[in-house]
Amino acid sequence: MKFNTSSSNLLKVKSDSLILPTGSQLNSYAKILDESLDGAVSSIIQSGDFTGKLSQTCTIHTFNKAFQRIILVGTEGVTSSQHYFAIIDAVNSALLKTPSTNALWLGEGLGENHEWLASMVARSSLSLSYQYAGTGKYPARPKLKKVVYWCHKKDQTIAAEKGLLFGKAVGNGMNLARQLGNTPANICTPNFLAKEAKRVANNMPNLTTTILKEADMRALKMGSLLSVSAGSVEPANLIIVKYKGAKTNVKPIVLVGKAVTFDTGGISLKPGRGMDEMKFDMCGGASVLGIMNAVSEADLPVNVVGIIPAVENMPAGNATKPGDVVKSMSGQTIEVLNTDAEGRLILCDALTYADKFKPETVIDIATLTGAVIGALGKITSGLLSNDDELATQLLSSGEHCDDRAWRLPLWEEYDKQLKSNFADMANIGGEAGTITAACFLARFTKKYKWAHLDVAGTAWISGPKKGATGRPVPLLMEYIKTKAMSNQSS
Image (cartoon, rainbow, N blue to C red; front, side, top):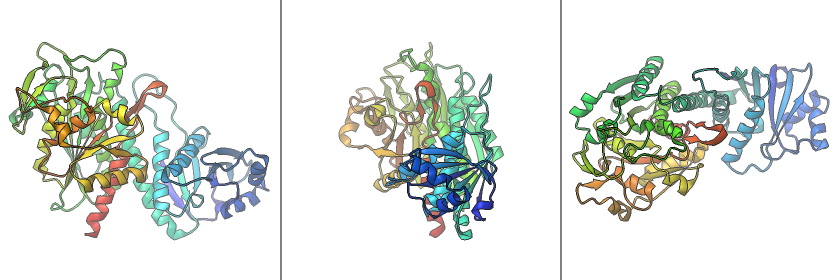
């Protein structure tokens, strides 16, 4: 999908569909269009078919005019950035149901922050047009090929162009993460993910990929990570993707993404109902690949390292058993009380490995606990951190791009629940499973600023529209962009 800007005479820009944000009282641009259509817009409002209320849409067919149709969208009652997202998604949903191959967005009707608005338009256009490209009969592809964002002034298009570039990168990154998440586990194995990481790096500038095999991890003494893959015929991979967009002396942001390509629970076997959705247990790793793709496409002046521990968790005669004690790369020992709490076992070694890059910050992304869904539902990701400033930055980034998180405490009282009689720690605690899981990870992150995003409730949806969401690619891209801007100004 192509994205462009325009400040040409509004009535002379030809398009299949023109997007007109307005309330019940027409703004100046809506009045111009209304006059060119002999009062069609005002007539729709007077008839009551369109009231201008928030995110309401109405399509007017213009017949032989510059625009084949105008899609009205209501802007009344806008009080938050989430309302803008609702407006943009509502329009794109209506637009994609039409046969339009190109569309003209009237950005002036939404506000003055054209860089931000244009980025949201591009991201939404790509995200809502996503179709799973899997095996068998493919779904019909959307016909929409081009989106033009219109501004009244020429200089406003400069900001809008920046927004479109960033939003397109985020949308493509989300869709890459979704495609990997939706791919069946018999195809999307740890080896498959490693090949995909190489493919992404080969196609994007400033990206390089290194794959550590089980022998390499054994040499690094990653006994915790390897304890998870022990019962599977699929070998583990530790995938490292590097993006160099800044000088070598700029410390990198390190992202660590959990990628359990299928999680049976191991010996602590999960119930059969809904187990098919455990192919989504690699969505943290998928989001890291999506982010690396997006950072490179957006050409951000920052250094980023993505680390993806990829394993399959299966029951077998040689699988790790409840009560076994394993030794992590850090030297700390872990009593595995539940083999279905495996994500933290692969993440802890990856987090130890992350220190070798001398990071500015480390953020891990994981579909880690069902408890986070009980606490926050499917709307908000859980956030825990050992650094208040980092946590605040991530929360702000999530608000700015409608990919929100909520901070939970990381207190010593919770950490005490990890006590073990036979090792330095157990891999599960008692109550507050999301918090005790993060307390476990915190024991391996004392050398740097670290945050943990538990996306078990937000990385995919269930039901008739089952599929990966691509979150938290927008949140982390917003955070990385902010850090890149900070690097430039310092």
